[in-house]
Length: 50
Image (cartoon, rainbow, N blue to C red; front, side, top):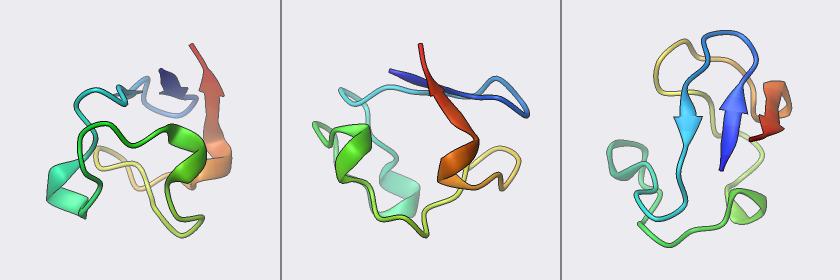
């Protein structure tokens, strides 16, 4: 899991982010670099391991 350092959204690889086209089971490392936080729009680089 990874947390957004801006809004504290938690990316859970078991859930993914289906609304953004990220399937359940997708590791954070495998998400495209242009993906943004679905809550606040922060860049992928603004996330830290939980």
